[in-house]
Amino acid sequence: MKLRGIELRRIGIPLVGPFRTSFGTQNDRDVLLLKAVTDDAEGWGECVAMAEPSYSPEVLASETAVLKDWFLPTLAGERGQAALGAHGAHAVTQLLHPFKGHRMAKAALEMAILDAELRAEGRSFGRELGGVRETVPSGVSVGIFDTIPQLLDVVGGYLAEGYVRIKLKIEPGWDIEPVRAVRERFGDDLLLQVDANTAYTLRDARHLAKLDDFDLLLIEQPLEEEDVVGHADLAKIVKTPICLDESIVSAQTAAAAIRLEACSIINIKPGRVGGYLESVKIHDLAQAHGLAVWCGGMLETGIGRAANMALASLPGFTLPGDVSASSRFFHTDITEPFVLEDGHIRVPTGPGLGVTPIPEILEEFTTSVEFIEL
Ligand code: NPG
Image (cartoon, rainbow, N blue to C red; front, side):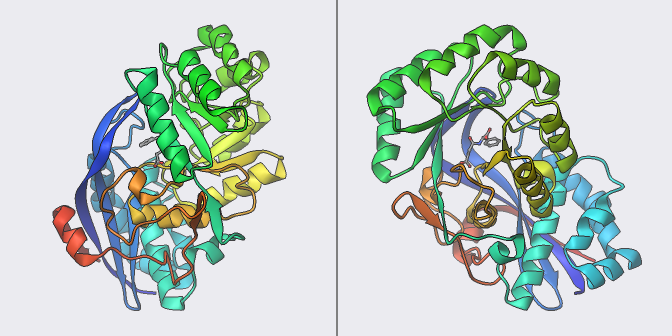
């Protein structure tokens, strides 16, 4: 495979409504899309970085800069092209290994090149990653609201649509009571979990233990991302399983967290860990240690969503993920929308991602575009 160039395209899509978490409120999604142009095919990648460094230090501006200044020149060089020619997308991680961090840019680049490679060979993302399911159960992430009646209305709406699991965003002051209200209104059979996005400290352990009354599937990332030991301490006080998100940025950090017993469940987000291939490694590691994993979401367009569906179809993804229908976030997606079918979403089976942006819609949302020839 010869990589001819990469198109970097910024798009802005309005959200169906504000999405409030413990780290801020989003009203639209500003996305960096990559298109890898090879001799044989074109492939798409989506960079999940956000505009502000509130979830991760990696932001759209930093990821665009490292791609242009470091990653693309490395792939363009003689050694880069030779490695891509021999090993395709599997060479990307090794080639970019000398560069620290910026996993969201690495993930997007690997994804675009892998998509181009698979499209050229007529193979699907799902098959390539090791997927075993045709459909995946769909969970939905529910933001923070001003009042409990508002929250109950929204959760009721999602359940009427068929979502099989509800994740409530929590923060100090919005935790026990909203969880109690949802559990009481919708009953004990509802699959329910919470996500704190690092909003607590170990001093809140007794308070968080009150969540044990509500039979939650898990508490996601209650403490700061670097406080892995704190999560291990918390896991001894709280009975609800601890799930890590922000703390896990690689298979190596996953191995350390498992060894420390800091979590019993992992949320895998390919952008956060540097790509779909690293995600498979974390899946395999978790499976070997008997931990459940599930696929997180970062308000992806249909491009990132398609790849997430493929990942979520692997056998170790035993909990429903944040793999919602496109309509959860967007009135108009840039690809054919992903839709709920009896609480599940169909994993694309066509070559590569199995979906492509619809040109007119892509143009409408585009705010800038640049082609970098290699
Ligand atoms: O379904 O795409 C989705 C969103 C799920 O809540 C969700 N994502 O902390 O997990 C998270 C949160 C998030 C969104 C994080 C955007 C970072 C950016």
